[in-house]
Image (tube, one colour):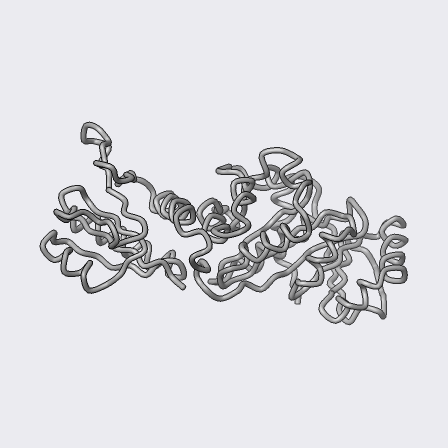
Length: 333
């Protein structure tokens, strides 16, 4: 289900630019209608129902917008004096469309919590995990995400590690993913879309780390499942980077995944821990059919218990971003 957005303003160039950009880049989120006449606006509001209305103050109907939209937002031109919305919320008129859309989604998620699913259609959920720390799990997850992001679909990277590696790979930061943890009962899907950042180099969408360790640590298995459902509540692919433990949260995520990449390298520790997971944990048989073994760093691994093995070559030492982008050129199919 899309958010029905009405843009009402007299600046035709502004309206055309904003509506075209939203329709092209955020077609899966917004259904955009425009109105450049205050006289026509009242008839439009009588004929249709809109979730969000962006309008210039001069377009405000005499009887206001109460009961006509869930979220009315007055376009505030910061070149003008004051920011008095006359009791209505204001939103900056001239700003990057990506920030404007994020602001709209964040505010709408607060007013429409539980009222709707964000946009309809679920993303494919791909989980990258390893029973052994240091096998290169995060590098593999990002390499896979970068490869998939080359296409037209939206690819989102969700880091569920207790201590996030995102700042190592992504330079831009924004609102913490912790802000979505408070809305897991409703509205989280919209809020996650609002706070997601897009890496300009790879095209991967990602989230800024939790505000503190406890925010992630205290999430229950049910909380994590709700978070993943919200993050996957739109078409595309969700790539989940799991911590290297096999607790209830990990088990739940592995079971709900559509595909699993299990990462090992050539170390003895990785081999021993893989063997323990396969032979001592009943979870393996439940996820076996959707799991591919990833032999990272040039490891020579053969294991008949896996239907598919992906071999990744040793990557040049150096910048972690360069490493995962190099590996993104290797087929994961």
